[in-house]
Structure formats: structure tokens, C-alpha cells
Amino acid sequence: MNHFFQDVYEVAKMIPRGKVTTYGAIGRYLGKKNGARMVGWAMNGCPPEIPAHRVVNSKGELSARENFHGPKSMQTLLEEEGHTIQRHKIQNFERVLWLPEKELL
DNA sequence: CTGATGACGTGTG
DNA sequence: ACACACGCCATCA
Image 1: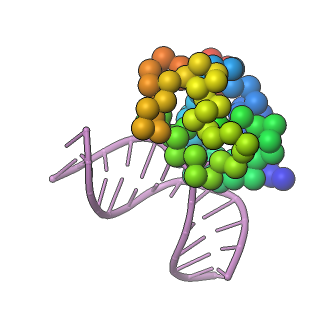
Image 2: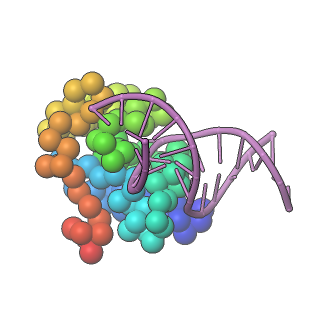
């Protein structure tokens, strides 16, 4: 695995329960201007240890719900963590948003 | 090597 | 608010 994958996984594992982050945030944290695509693509091969359901796009939409393979749907997992989802979008998105470059610094 | 693709983001109309 | 185009960068055909 490349260094990039490792970094993405490291950050993804650091996401606190009940919080979510965006692909762009991780991309910027890794130094990419817009590595969002790479982050999403990296998550494509993410092991089950990675809470990929906590990673959404900048709009707070569950863009990964189609690609997320799991026993429970992405929405269910997020709702069990205390989030509110409506029409595949996280409500109070800004309230639960967790930015690595700001929080983790 | 060139072109297409992708779990995206930002700018513009 | 919505639609579209372009950028970004790694992988695959």
C-alpha cells in the first residue's frame, strides 16, 4: 500500500464516534489541494476497521452508500451513532463535522 | 504513453 | 438553489 492509503486510513480511524468528516478535509490534511477523489478511491479498498460511513462529501450527503458494503446500511450505522439522516443527507451536518486539520492539527 | 474513470470540490451562470 | 465545466491525482485498459 502507498503512503497515501495509510494516511487516509489513519485519519479515518481517528474520527470520533458521533462525528463525520469529508473527503476534501482529509485530502487537504494530506497536503493535496483536492485529493477528495483519491481519498474516496482509497476508501474503496478500505478494510472493515475503517469507519467509512463517517466520511461523506462536502454537502453532507451519503455519496458512498452505494459503494459501502456492510451488514447494515450506511444510514443505519450513522443513525446508531446519533446522527440524523434525511434523504441521504446528514442533518446538522456542520454541527457534527470533524476536521482533522483543525481538530487534530 | 494516452485516455478514461472515480465513495469529490470549487467556481460560474 | 440547480446545472455544468474544470481541476486534481492515482489506477487501469
